[in-house]
Length: 317
Image (cartoon, rainbow, N blue to C red; front, side):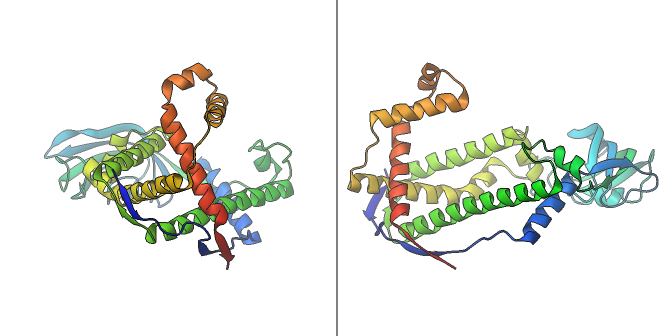
């Protein structure tokens, strides 16, 4: 179990934070991004160019033999997106509709599949369609496509974008406050962090990544292969954050002990009710799925974090 040898002063921590006003240029930039995202694909004649969206069939061969995962039909690939291994999209430049071309490529040395890492391969690619992205126009039709309540005109839309950006800036500012204040507390504390606590934190980070990918319709294994990583490399990438989390949790638990903080049964029950509403599940089902003491611990930690942040002093620059 981790041990706090010295708990830094956690009340009245003073930090400098950055003001983040929303300017007209920020609103215009966000609207330009949305216009680009809502681009329409228009079929074009001629040769494949950077930025074109192609529909292709492809199959990969190593030493003349097709390899697993290297084949697809009717795949939509934007040229210049960097979606495929280096050289794939570049060697497609200048192709025309109906053309088949052999691409001579080399997989990265750190590619996730060991049998393909660093291997020379040939991809046979056939182009079926070539399309250009045509950016949408900022008009009432575009605005209404978002189906935002009470937003019907371009002016309404700009006000809504500004409000959204201001909300994002507030979240960023809140995160900056938390990170800086808790960073000072961590720096001023002396903690012997236990490896078991680090591993628990690491497992939480991996689960978070897995859940985020699942929301995008991608499995962790697919992501690792696409990024040319294995689980060991992912762990190495997440380890600094896991160590920081383990240290932070040990410090927060010490603050809970010193301040004698305890979430009441009523507050725990209230949180379960909120979870029931949020997930639209019966309270009984929620209680079967969660660890009540774990929930109480998390609520205790929220109390302690809030105590630290509420007493902090923020200097705006």
